Amino acid sequence: MRADARRNRDKILEAARDAVAERGTDAPMELIARRAGVGVGTLYRRFPDRGTLLAALAEQYVHELMDALDGAVAAEPDAWAAIRAFVAHSVETSRGAIATALAGTSAPQARQALVRRLDELVRQAQADGAMRSDVGTGDVMELLNVFACHPGVVPERFLPLILDGFDRRWPLP
Image 1 (cartoon, rainbow, N blue to C red):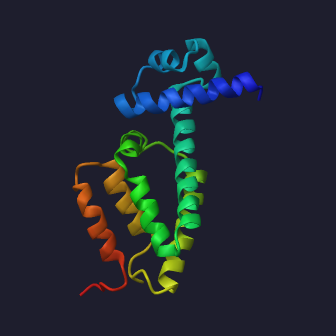
Image 2: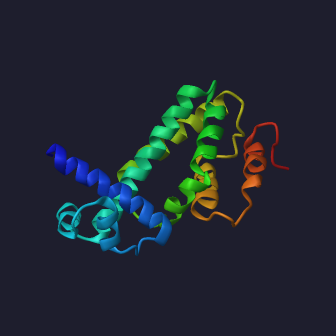
Image 3: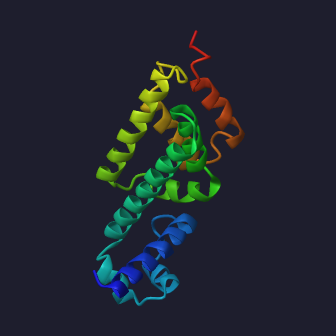
């Protein structure tokens, strides 16, 4: 891809991210083009329809989550601390709007890679004795779903309390 085409694509995705976070997946394509500083024709040459644009945006978002997960692994002393840091990062309010908007949008391969990587961390945290064995990757993903895709349903101040419940020191009765 030519450098100018790559720049236009990146500008479109950045503008789409903001517009979708503000207005949802029905954000006008004209608005996205205007915010990106490109013509509508350029937008449609890169992304022939809304579904293609949303799929690219979802894939980019999942890759950003993967980068955040890798960053947490590099920065934290163990797998459980990395999981906690990743969850906290992922549910920050600034990411919640885009997560909500893209909740039903598909990026299956990228999402599968993220889940596999998270599963490795969960298994490591369990093997280290830091995370309960009866809590799994699906539980962590559900926690992300509740806090990132449905902000406000559960107050954000409960996130650390729920994560504490994943700790091996608090077995289920």
